[in-house]
Image (cartoon, rainbow, N blue to C red; front, side, top):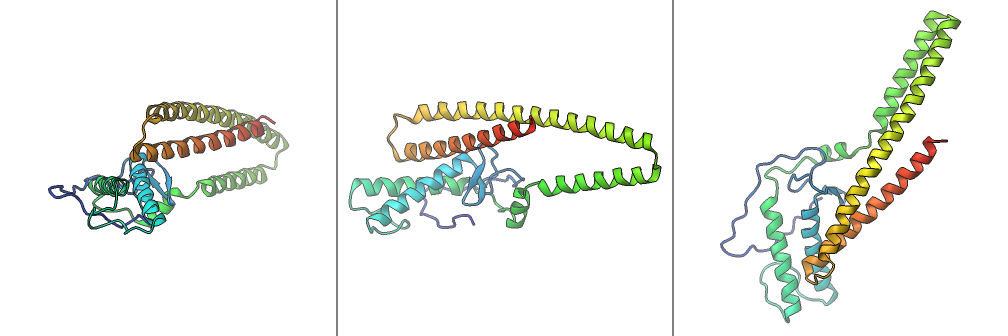
Length: 225
């Protein structure tokens, strides 16, 4: 689940745990609800993902050159290796400071992530059965015609609501993309390890937004047919 490997925290640094509790839709590590996206099959906020990417980048660098794994001393063979170790240590310290005192139950997290399609289908089936029962009880042609007319109007109204929702979600995603682009512009000229990890995370966010916009456009075209 969550990466449990820790690095030594600098002397004099006290690890503080937040009193926040996890709620569905929030980060499973710190409970924050800002820029939450899936990371290693878990919902994680932007700050946590950035720190995790820094640590993962350090692991890849050390593994690529066959160097001593993270943890323990910061002793290094050169400045680049030391920079990776120090940055990873600071990222781990930041994660430890924001870690929830009581991690959420994995079962609750999975339940919160479960699509609501099943609930929607169940509601549709119940409504359909209720409509059928009403039609059988009345056995009146006029009532049946009225029911069909009302159902048709409801379908049109539902389609209109769906289109409005699609448009609203699309506009919200465009606003989010503008924010991501602005953040990318801010770190474009930065060359530190943290900046590279931040750019990587922002580019992943942008790719996710683009895919979602594409799916919404397909849904809009389908609803208009």
